[in-house]
Image (cartoon, rainbow, N blue to C red; front, side, top):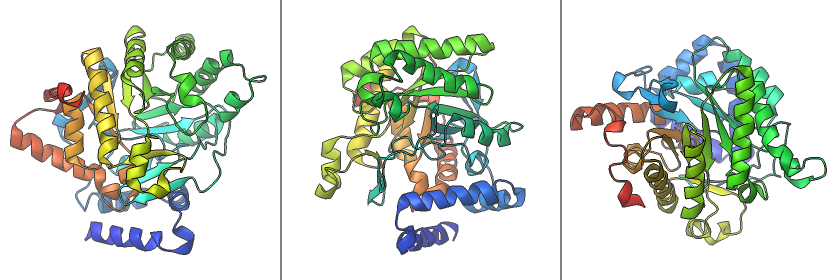
Length: 390
């Protein structure tokens, strides 16, 4: 009953003239959640009851997950990926759905509108093409929004990106300044972050991937961020978010950076601009700008291959957070077999199926699966099939 009603409403809304733009629907939901649901505990209780099908938040000690060498302990390995809540406006509501952690961002040092609309497309019921271009209200606005959660125990990750103007205006923003722009955001949000992510893999800011995934640049960004934290007397875990379009040599270099700087790990992966995948979605999407996400088999293969490569490079010594194509329990298990120990979701939350039920589904399926196969947690199978995916 719960799922059928949601799916009917989603389908009906997507056919209304004003709501047929997925970004507009998302903006309306964010505003409603931020202004009406989050300040109202009773409304949040209804939200939780609805999207857990009346069961409420399900907890099981076997799902507790230790990240960043024990610095961060979360109640389950299922998290909200950056991009859904870019400015930190609905952390509590997303947590209410069953997620153990919400990653906010990408957060930029100054406000940015992003690319021109339309910039979010739905090629199929299970995929998206995202060409948002780092739309962000900026670090000061995010800091204000996150104050709402200062007394909560909700783990919040902060994903940091770089403004387009920094790449376009070399006179005002020389390259040597870029690492300090990342560090400045980290300094301003250090008290509110459970961890930071260096996002050097967005395909929607021209020149970003080519420059920022270079080994030398990554070294400078990491040094700047770690220096800021040392001065503040804190040591928040650092992750790097990779592009699935990196070749094996590029992934190996980033893996080396992670090990050399003793980072917490990697998030694998961002969206893909792979032309074969776009062509498979239909010829009308081949020249559409943006990165593909969702449950496409070729995209899943790219993500799994990268997870397995990073796992083998690091010998499982760091976290690998899977992100991409995780719309059900089977893809999650495959990601664990490849080497992941935590799982981020975004696209499935926005689709008609599974929609916001996805966290409750995954938790329930995980408990049933552990009971059936007799294991204690996902770490028991982590990386067992890494060779299969590389």
